[in-house]
Image (cartoon, rainbow, N blue to C red):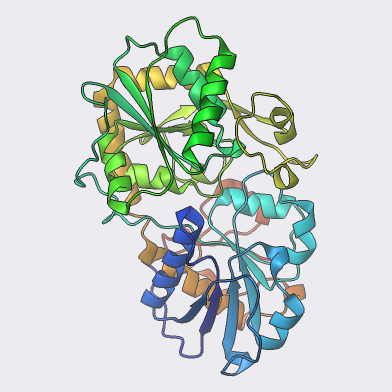
Length: 418
């Protein structure tokens, strides 16, 4: 673990979706909790606009961490109030939206949770320092021993679980088509989908999509759960399942993948995006993919969920399109090999025990301390006293940055601006 000396003058104002349900809100709350656990004084607020009036305390002591869309912040106002202004963000395609570039380059630094995000920032022309601080997962909440939730119709069946927001990026089309075409009503399998949105609308979209496929057989059943459920029931869905499956087109992190692994079940997924930092042959079944323009599939009538095309359909963006036959093979392989799934699940649980929010908080603290005492952006990121704590483990990123940073076995990544 990273050992950071006390920093009495580091005062963090965290502005993010701390009251929002779901993955983004959960990550924001966990970051705040982890920073406080690392000994940092954090004031947390929701709302993307800065409050009226001057904040208490000296500007020289305070840093703003902004966890909303980068172009929503009044940077001029923020600079009058804070010594440093830092963006905490994620992105899912090869490049960020073009309308974000100018805003992001106005921050003092950017914090992202995955190697994929670092590449996306650099390839999009982001010149300010970019730091990688991986997300954590609470392995006490998500654990194999949590009582499984009751799922109607699951007895005697191999249960696939998929947890995602109902949007095009998550690729519900490939998930449904692969499952329906590969498994018929005689196969002892069940696909459980936990998603958001109005249940009636989601069910209609799924039903209409099934009709459009003109399947030659009656497909295996699906159990749909839409809307909010208790935290205990969500954790129980993971432990009631045999495998987690999501052929996502792009993730900044992939929190449900981490939750599944922590719960002791393997993952069936594409390994492109944020999840490629922690998915491997020991804990998952890899789905082959090709990189494609998001706009190509958004134009088709078979896009059954929200596309957010204003963000994801720009000409120079790419994301992963899962190979349908490859997805079918991996789902079939998992269903025929429950013993292998248990082995991979145990490895996944072991892998996630090293991905705690405590670790994330300590690493984030070191990054924020570095930003506070760092030189001006035009001088680059030259922090010899800190560098020995920040190894660069991803070879592709090492080649990108041209820097080698030996030392402590942590996964903090620092790339300096030039």
